[in-house]
Amino acid sequence: MTQDWVDSPPRPPEEGKVKLTLVVACALIDVDNRVLIAQRPEGKQLAGLWEFPGGKFEPGERPEQALIRELCEELGIVTQEACLAPLTFASHAYESFHLLMPLYICRRWQGDVTPKEGQALKWVRANKLRDYPMPPADIPLIPPLIDLLM
Ligand SMILES: Nc1nc2c([nH]c(=O)n2[C@@H]2O[C@H](COP(=O)(O)OP(=O)(O)OP(=O)(O)O)[C@@H](O)[C@H]2O)c(=O)[nH]1
Image 1: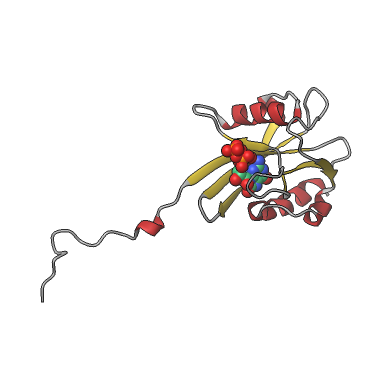
Image 2: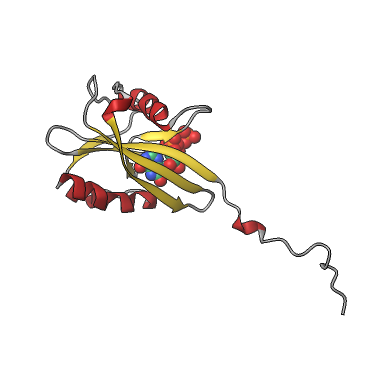
């Protein structure tokens, strides 16, 4: 019997490889302990679903820098690193990538929350978040928010 792999054993399957996508997100919390969610606009992946503001990193950015930039671009507000506290994270296998998404909470910012990208916004009690369809990655983020806010 020939063993043509004796000098070069079979490799682990290629399908084990994933594209890891790093996204940073924020639960903004208002004075009534409600959380801000935003609806993904038409034309984007997962359009119509409600999500936490945030987005992908730009090259060389730290998570807090990326989040401060995204909050300014999407909502027209300014916050500082000292006002961002890590709460939990999402790790979810989408079909074409694996999402790793830290979720921060933020209670202090300057400016009025304004939908800068035409997205619908809603302030929602943590125990009502399940009434809004969210991306699958976000579902495990709800219980820590309920624990924190209810
Ligand atoms: N911001 C945000 N993104 C989320 C959440 N949950 C979730 O699965 N995602 C996914 O994480 C990625 C976020 O990237 P993004 O908002 O910067 O990206 P995008 O699809 O608008 O893409 P683009 O910026 O390349 O146009 C998307 O694939 C989005 O579906 C969430 O709660 N907030």
